[in-house]
Image 1: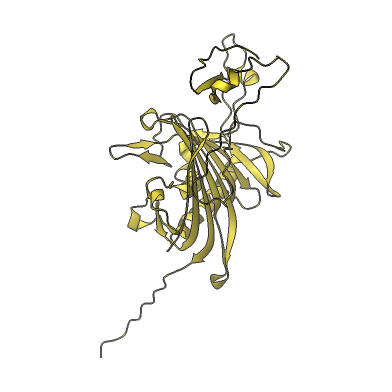
Image 2 (image 1 turned 180 degrees about the vertical axis):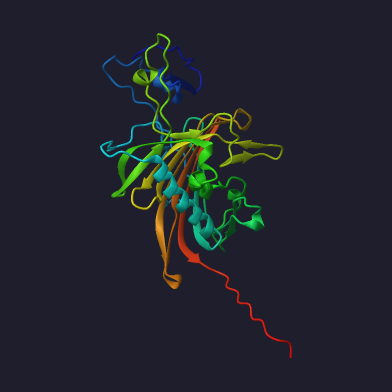
Length: 346
């Protein structure tokens, strides 16, 4: 593709190139800085690549920390190495996953951990604008004290907290695994397609149900454009998993996604979600989450619990985009034991 664009020679300008993907409706844009001296020698021959000026923006925050790369999961993309050779019994898979989700709820109130949060913000053209990092003592409550609503508590560790993170900290990561909680499974359309591997472990991949083919003289749409591999919020049901709030209003979030569920145990190994649609009132276009789970062994009580190990949250607004990385470590399990002793009064 080639073309010509007349640019005023007085002063520095930015040329914006916008692209529209006809198939998906997705758009993207790139701003190219242009200076008057770029035109002094006239246009370059067609076969010669123009050398554009380089702009470098100093990275704010810790310079020695590796950059966070924009690579959000696309839950409608093909699943690598998926095998449909073995049939997947969805009721059995969901039953096992529901039992593991129930165990997670039981254990969430009994552990805390250290959490490192790294936050990176880019402007509308992808130029880094801010970088912050901080460490927290992290705990979760999902019991009677919280009204059976998931509440996360983050206590800044001494000497590591950046107060700017308080206003933009993402929450709700444990809630994503509760998509498979027995009382919440009915909120989503789900289908089990086949087996794949995640970190060398066999796992069923759960996503949305296949659509019913349309008839009445039309070709079956499933043949022309098969439904992407994902689970998704059922239309007409109020979302209960995740919500976003402002000072005036709470916005329930419709999710779609896919999960790798261990074939032998029903544990969620990996989970990816996307928004089904943006939220105009929040200037929110897209949001994607990728969470990895792993077993944590507590020797003191001889128990193993599957907990979130790391997560990446990619959010794109009208004017900027953000990447938030959560990393959990130093898990500690605690319990309160009570013993009742009844004696005759003296």
